[in-house]
Image (cartoon, rainbow, N blue to C red; front, top):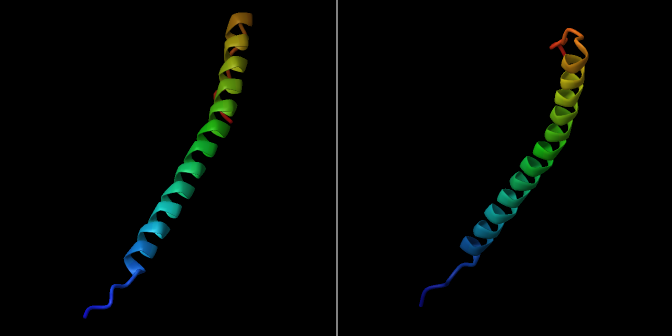
Length: 58
């Protein structure tokens, strides 16, 4: 009679949790960077509309 181990289920659960954490980090960083990029692009548009030379350095 073979003993069935539950370690494979545990490994799968760890993989799912790790994948979910990676997804959360990616979504959060994309939202944060998106907001900053949007703000910078709006500033550049305003400067272009006013005829002010655009400074591209951070």
